[in-house]
Length: 259
Image (cartoon, rainbow, N blue to C red; front, side, top):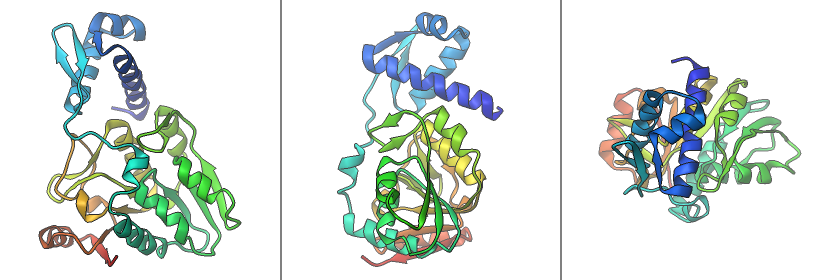
């Protein structure tokens, strides 16, 4: 599947999600008519969204469901494991160098990096509203902000327009967060978040994952990377020794930061 087709499908499924949030139930016929695509295409979209835990497919359509592992809102997640996130963010900021072009993900841990940015001239590209606010008045930062629809649960813009814009950059380092990591299965998230992260990683010299110990052992359906796809994984001292060994066995640099 080429990138244009992928973006078109993601944009359509975003609109389907908006529709089903409003109406609870949708039909294949009404969606195929609205988006001018075949019934088969809509059924494929609905099955993808069912795999992600968004809805339940039934004959002729689908119904919204509440996934068992729902994402907390961004503001709520900022409070979880705060000290661990601070230590991870501080360690991550030490990896920034003069004239770097860095991507800062809409992640609660990545956001904390803005408190520890070194006094170096860097270009920051972000889709995070909070990162933008923190960096806007930093005299060392050349700031680029990704457009798109704002999603409160992520704290940033996240749609097909966001992905297209970010695909045009080349990054020295991408600092990424996640809510779900399994050292066997990989690192997972929602569909649009995964697609944006994959585009970022393709355009980055280094992909750096910031993840506190509470995220290990969890996964959702859509994977944006295997463990070995990251140059460095930064976590806290609460990591299980089994997960620590699994990461190191895959040849990935693991940085463990004390709170």
